[in-house]
Image 1 (cartoon, rainbow, N blue to C red):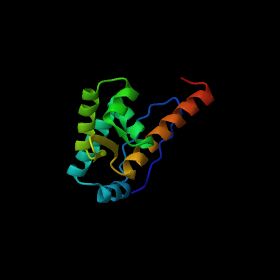
Image 2: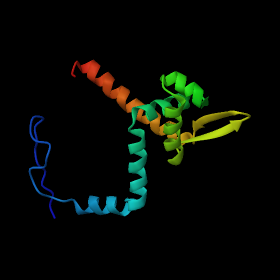
Image 3: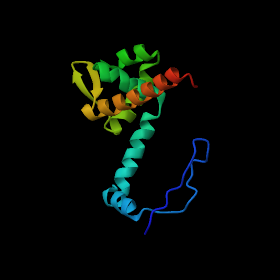
Length: 137
């Protein structure tokens, strides 16, 4: 089957004007597609990270191991509110804790969480730089 390339200009629609499915590409992607339960867990992780308070907690914990009191002070909120958010993050295996006497210290569950957060941050900062650099808003 011959491919037809649709010519588009920058101001034209962002939807294909021609109807063509590249079966080779579709099958290649389909072969590597993760199962529904994996995709659901990924979506749940992003949903949990969609809350600004939890995002701030992840940012703080990417810098240092902190206790609930430290986080409450840092984010100017109550220990109860922080504990609630940490419980959600812990249930998603994004943070972990360790006890030291009467103190409980939180940290990111593993390096993957730090990498995920840092990549997102890099993406946002790059977008902000591009916007500033080109003078667009």
